[in-house]
Image (cartoon, rainbow, N blue to C red):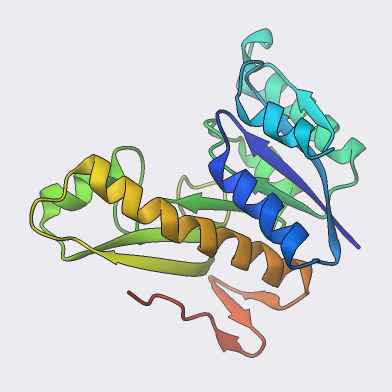
Length: 209
């Protein structure tokens, strides 16, 4: 049985979607812990309500990114995590941390990577005038918002859409996309070949409207 540790900084809506999917679909996996870098993260209460161990590694208590990442790594490894899932975890991780979990750490980014990296992706998409926007689940590498893409989901940008409406439409997709990607890992169906992720012998293709 695979052990999953989920990292959050806030309400953790994607964390909740993953927890609910794992329970409803009876994955061969255990959500071993939910860890936050913020003591007041709302998602901690939800995790506790589901009987999931929680822990805070307060990023403000450390003098450097390296010190924080080292403490976080020790906390994760105490749960013997097979997979680390970033679900609204608002920290840029050091290369050593990422290397330690190579091909075992996932993130979801609210754009169709490699387009629109960084913050304010919905506004970036609106400003660029693209017709489709989306979300990407990828394995994390040392380069921000890069790494082998596991799966993507799309939404159509309609006349009158703004940042808030795009975010709302996309979040619905994210709550399906991220659990699906995590389940594929748990079931041993993901193989990383260079910068591509192969799913059961074929590349993932779920970018449907």
